[in-house]
Length: 179
Picture 1: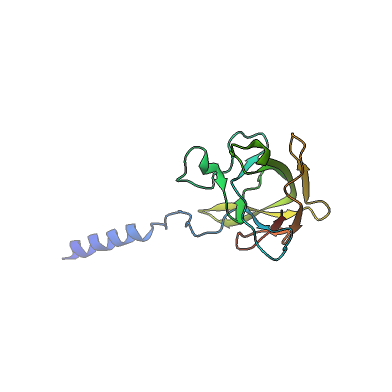
Picture 2: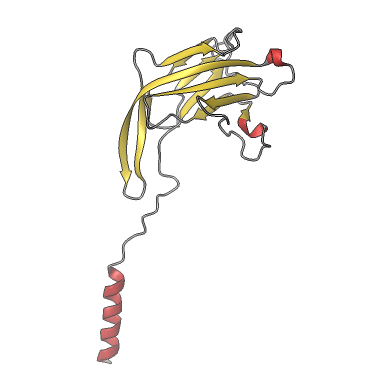
């Protein structure tokens, strides 16, 4: 009987030294994306949906994937009034081209504008399992630079308003784009 108690005691001691698995919970907040809402320039309080918007990072060939179930072409397009896009965690600026009516057969309706977002970065410790996340603060003097595409036409984006300069969560609007 003493041998069985001793074996149970040794087994209990060996299991008590186990550590919790280091797995980052999917619900843990990580590096936030920039949240952009689109508004009607004529009715500034009214949200407006973009049509077949394609967003491509500078130097990239493929756009941001908005629809994982879409075809090779449509997965890069969105037609909503809100998007979330990532910022570079290894640079103090990120540039994107925003193409309205991308893929339209009438090329006169396609319009491309370029946006450069400037910010500072801070790495914040989350946990041993998740590591660090990067939070961003938009440049207070000149956070956004808007330019026309390579083919000069009128900019489809008329105005960009910074709503929140600290980008530490995806639960709020950071920029409003009026068109």
